[in-house]
Length: 489
Ligand SMILES: [Zn+2]
Image (tube, rainbow, N blue to C red):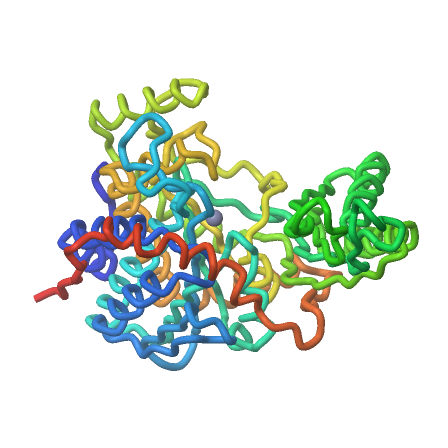
């Protein structure tokens, strides 16, 4: 890494802690890679993360907001209260062997990490432990809260955490996320999303001998699909909708009495996705009318667009410059190029740059359940280089680097940026006032509301069956060495 100018004793101590624990950080990310757990099934992952935080002196609250795999770990007391949060879930059917440059599953059909949330978790735990070392050693005042947020891939947990008050007293928030280089932004960064199930109910009948007696729920799902396809022509720019059919009946000689379609509605604002949901209800109503069925809609989660606070983005950017991008070896660069070629992407190798902010970010169509937090408190979502440029996520190629030295180096650099940003805030609490003043300007005219339906409970069972089916086969690949962070002498 490039030399670190003027980092001060506090950050130097945190970096020393992280360098000494580089192997443990790598081991933590790799352990979670092999757990490969789906959203709300991250039991091994959360257990390991919470144990490490507890061993490091954090007080643990497990199972927050009704999520068995969610947690809040706290160190210190009083203000400011700074939160770090991130996700650690994998994706279905994304099992991929580490370092192998062709699609090859660890366990065929099993879930796996094909984005890098395993490294998010390592960066958050390591960065928080390092910041805590400095807080303790130098008597820095304030509270550090570390939130484990399940099921990002289903956009589920953080809107529930916010609704249940877990961010009410938080002054500032930071969330690390895997990327292909260091990068942070401000303004609207990602999109709002509503996740909703539409379930249609009809009546079974023998499809051969008395189909006229049936009321076909699958027909309603298909007609809703046709209606939404037509509606796409008239949707506002920057809105999108996609779906999967989660229930299409049992067998062709029984008219399906139940059928279900799961929709994601995306848009640049909370209001836009709520409007799209209302429009979809109309289409469902029409489909039900045409098929003489009934329907119900269940909003499972709904997230605000992720926004970045300018004060915090500038703070993180300054730490990027200090830490610098990792230095890659020729072998690491060659692996990246071969992978890019295999994935038909431009073979540019690994990134040696720190992206520079030139004004507000460009809002992306993807979403993240961290969005709600960013409307409650000034937040920075920042990226660290543990994956390979030009590779799109949720594809086998995006799983190749996540338990290699590329991910490890990116995680070390990312945890330094996280620790240094936290220390910077605890050393200069006036940053909180500045960030809040800017936040008030940034969010002017918009008042946050939870888009979750009243009394909505998290869909904890969503991935249970899939995880159970593969868990035993995956267990055979778990690492046998457990990471252990060593404190400073
Ligand atoms: Zn993610």
